[in-house]
Length: 178
Image (cartoon, rainbow, N blue to C red; front, side, top):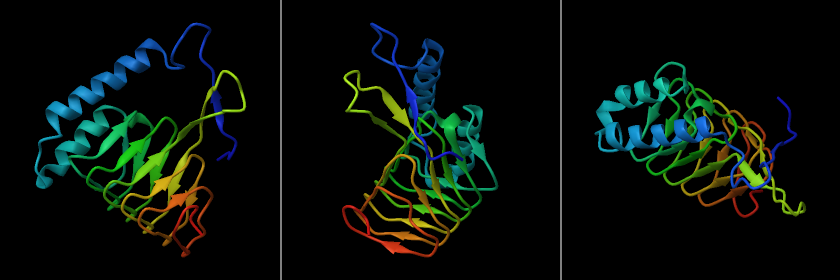
């Protein structure tokens, strides 16, 4: 997997780099999640996983996705067995987000695969994947930037800002996380 960000340029006069069909699919998912999943109790996790699969998410085994999780572009999300996406967690999956087996992303954490090249006057969208390794823990309200890999058994403290890779079994906290 390349660490180089993918640059997505808008066409002249367009406000988005996404095609009409991509925007339509994203809107359909948002509506489906609100109507079919947002109100469901925790035991209906298999139903939420089914809806995610219908919209292209790769589901391996039985992860848990909280009914109030927010997921953009689910076709870019891969969740492995016993991975957990907590209450009000945001998976802003403009690029690939992978949660390994047993990975836990706590409440209100934000995994963001997109940013903008502010050095370019057009501010093109740049995306890069995020990987959270097996049995890794991302604490409440942590923010993970594009292109970051969090290693197996690593711990990211609550409210940390993760700007670079976290080694396996490491524990980091703060802004930037160290």
